[in-house]
Image 1 (tube, rainbow over the protein chains, first blue to last red):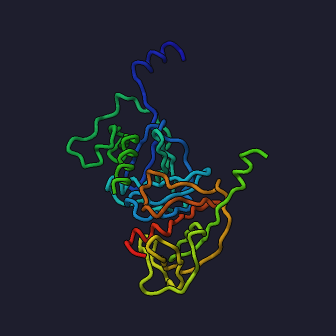
Image 2 (image 1 turned 180 degrees about the horizontal axis):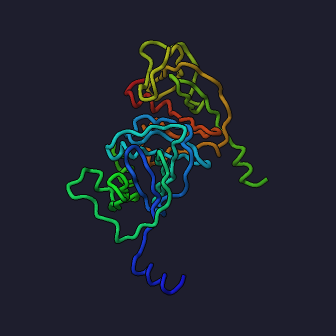
Image 3 (image 1 turned 180 degrees about the vertical axis):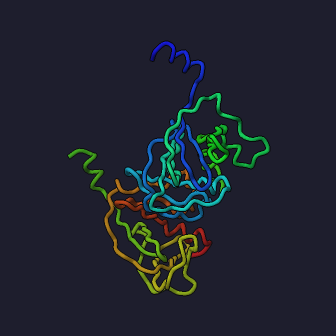
Length: 160
Length: 123
């Protein structure tokens, strides 16, 4: 890296997020929490799981629980269609597939542009790292604290 | 032949059956016989309601025989251990959902029959 650019990067640190849309939400997850993206295949529903666990799917010889973030965040309900994707999210030893309607891609976001989660927001705000504004209100991306989200999901699942 | 090859060849006999539109599997050694179902036999709505439920898987429990209503019984197949997986802890599924059998592009839920009877508090 050229010295000028190195100085600029140091002055304006960035974080990389995997961005996607599900329902009406535009969400981002730190890219280090995302292993890969795949087509949503056949889901096997599970008995007596929380509603945000849509079931399990087999992938690369492993069994992935599939999480519906809309249900988890109380923002509706995801639907699986032919174009639906799953991203494989990981934090520590927990791995899960997460439903995404559209993948927006990887975005490097300057940390200075990440606004804090809205005060007095709904319960979903506790799982946000922050919000990055776009050109319009429709373009804002909610950045998820994926590690906290998956830990909460597991706690809710096993506490039943 | 090394241990890995021996391990790959080891298998478990799994009995596959349908309840409603879904296929499940269970350790065939748990099944004593397949019988006609009776009205009081076990149904687990969480697994889906049987279409007709004319058959029952009969299994042994410490309290006596248990009967689970099913729609169809397919076959007993020897499944290699390498195709069997425990339920991921993140899923938090019912205790009778003990694991998954991976078959090509689908995952078949494995049911512990004795645990189904415990879940309903009867046999």
